[in-house]
Structures are given as structure tokens and as C-alpha cells.
Image 1 (cartoon, one colour):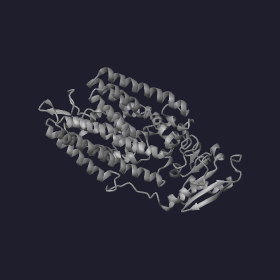
Image 2 (cartoon, helix red, strand yellow):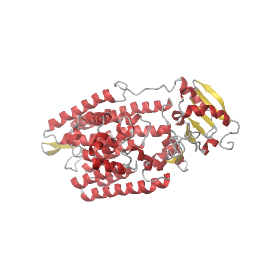
Image 3 (cartoon, one colour):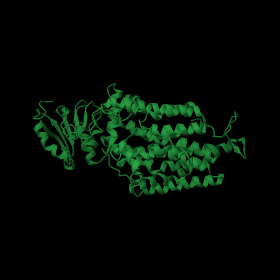
Image 4 (cartoon, one colour):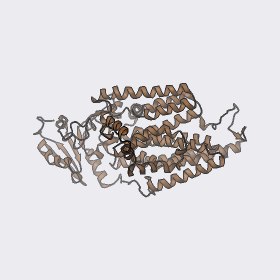
Length: 516
């Protein structure tokens, strides 16, 4: 971004060197001043980003190496991107759907070339961490404009990097939603400097992350149209609306075989859209109660408190309101919990709103005091709700060199690369580079498969399974009930250590009518 080369201002000069406002005018820095006021803060910005990336990159990769990253969702994306990199249909057998039938995550095509060089789930985890770290750059640029100081711009940067929701987003397996944070913040920055081509590029990439992104991009376009450029704003609204219509009503139903948005319809309260609309009209207090339960009020506090409640003072927060309302209405626990990826658009939108709120302070000294306060609030919130090891609710640190992990590596080494495998969810992520990998007890007892219409049934794919990798001592429910019957299907144990058991099919099945 060119903003790292010269400061943002309402006017520019063509002279060489860095320039800044001085009592309403512009003057060039001397070389010593440039070093102190611009170069050193930029170095500190890069160091903060590096520290964040190293901390969370090591953490997320460590979880994966310790076999604590489940198939839902890291394994889904890893198998999907691997299949794309091999020019195969991305039908993800972990969930029983085409990768793009579940969500319109077309931005994943940008990661395919990396799988040609390094075919590993590490690519996804590293990309996610880097994306969230890079988002600190537009935060810095926006804050520098508001605070007229690169030094004070570092306070909102630290605040962003310590936001509890950002940390949890980074550690919740892998989700393309993480890319929404730098893309949205980048789009907002380009609006502020009126660079419309890169702004539209950010919008296009943002829409390619997920089908629900238009919920934010449409109001973003309206904001641009009202405050900056009517034509660009309306083009943004049109692109977002068209993308939503095409993906939700045509592409995803065509790939999944079910009606528009049917896969996620269970999240809508009061029996679906019609029931929600009727309740909102006849008993609006019921809708309000749905949105303001104790858990959801806590969710709101955990989103706004790290930002010193500043977004409440900015009209830009209205851009994020549709996403916030959708999360508060949802019956799906993950959507109103900061530990899950449904905060991605809100993190970026509310961060931008907080910086815009800083600009409203009548005095520059007041803005800077609020920026410091934002940083302090973020540190306090990180201690209360963040995943850091020094917080009150730290994320667990599994041991990648522990006895279970070592046993799993030995067992996986016995499985041929092209074998059809069924494994415990957190084991599947190390077995996804094949055309068929199933999340036990699927396919012997279908769970979270396809549109879930086959739940509890034995799938035909069960007859093709050659290996089963599990921890029988930790199974319960249908998984535990199915396990003893696998012997009748010709499976025998070929490895057992540290509770890890690997079964291999060596005989014909007595169920399903055939042998592998």
C-alpha cells in the first residue's frame, strides 16, 4: 500500500521526502525527523505484525501437529484445496458436499498454486495468520490519518492485534473468513484516499470469500455513495447484490442439490424466514428477546469493550449492523461467540468504525488520549477473554511430541497414500490428501454428511473403506456402538498404542453386499 511510503493527508505534493501537516500547511521532514517520526514507527509496526504472526502461527501449527485440529473445518478446506491443486472435482468426502456447495469460498483458488509447491495444511494455517497480521497495515494507515501521527497510530494497531476475537479467529482451525479482515480494512482505507480501482479490487476479493459477505458490502457501497462517490458506491451495491443472487439462488443449489440457503436454514429462529417475519410483525418483543439473551449481551460486550465502545460513536458501525443482527438472531451457538469465525466481518468493520470515531474528537490531543485508551481497553479485554497464555481463559497447548501424537504418526505411516480411510475427526486432517477420507462414524453411520438427510444411515461408501483410525477409549454414542460391528465387516487391528487403534479390512463385509 502506498500509504506506507507517504502519510495520508487531504492534500499531496510532488516533492521528494515525507510530508506532514504543520499548522494547516505542509512541510517536508528533514532526514532526522523522517527517521524519528516515520521510519521508526513503521519498523515497530512490522515488528508488532511479526510478533503476532510468530505467536499465533506457532500456536496454530502446534495444534495441528499435535492432532488437535478437527476435520470440521480444517480437513474440509485442506482436502478441497488439495483436490483443486490436482485438477480434480473438489468433492469433499469429510462433509459429503462439493467444496463450493457449502460456501462460495472461491478465494481459495489463490492458495492452489502454493499446494503445487507445498501440499500441506500448513499453507492454510500460515496464510490465515499472515492475513490477520497484514490487516494491521490498513489499521495503521487509517489511524495515522485520524491521529496525524505514526507514533500514536501504533496504539490502535496494538489494540487490533490484541482483540480477543482476532486471536480466537486465528486459532479456530482454518476458515477463509479470516481473509475478510484485511480485505475489508483495505477497502475502507482505499475509500478514504479515493483510490477506486484498488477499492473495487478489494471488494471483488471480499465477495469471493463467502456468500454472506454482501450483507456488509451492500451497506458499504451505500456508505461510499452517500459520503464519497455515488457512482462507485452504486456499482459496489450492484456487484454485491448480483453476487449474492447468483451464488445463493443458482450456484450453491446447483452444486448441493438442495434449495437456496437450505443447508443453514436451521439457524433461523421461529421456524424460518416466514416465521421470523411473522413474529417480528406480531410479537416484536419476542425477536428482541431472541437477540438480547444473556449470552448475546455478553457477546456484544466482548466485541465492543476492546474498542473502548468507540464504534458506538461512528455512523460507519451501521455498515456492520446487518451482520451483527444476523448473528444475534441466529439459533446457532457459534454465531454469537467470539471464539468462532463469525466475528470476521465484525472485527474489521468495528475496528474501522472505532478509528472513524477518533476523528470526531474536537481536539487532536483528545483523539490521541482515546487512542491510548483503546489500546489499554484491548489489553484488559485480552486478559479477560483472549486466547493468550497470560489471559484468564488461555487456549490449551497440546504437545506435538506427546506419546499420542507419536503413536498417530506411526499408525498413519502404515496407511497407503491412495487408501480409503475413515478416522476420528481430529485425525482426519493428517489424511486428507486423498479422494476419500471420512469423519468416523461416517460412512458407517452418517453424521454431518451432505444435507444431513441421510443421518444415521449406512452409506454405500462404507463398503470401500479400507482403514479405520480411532481412539476407542474416547468414543461415545453411535461411534461407540458401531465400533464392535466393524469386525463383522472384515476389519482387524494392525496397530494399537497409546489408545490409538488402526483397523485394516482384510476380509469381505457381511453388510452392504460386497467386499472392498
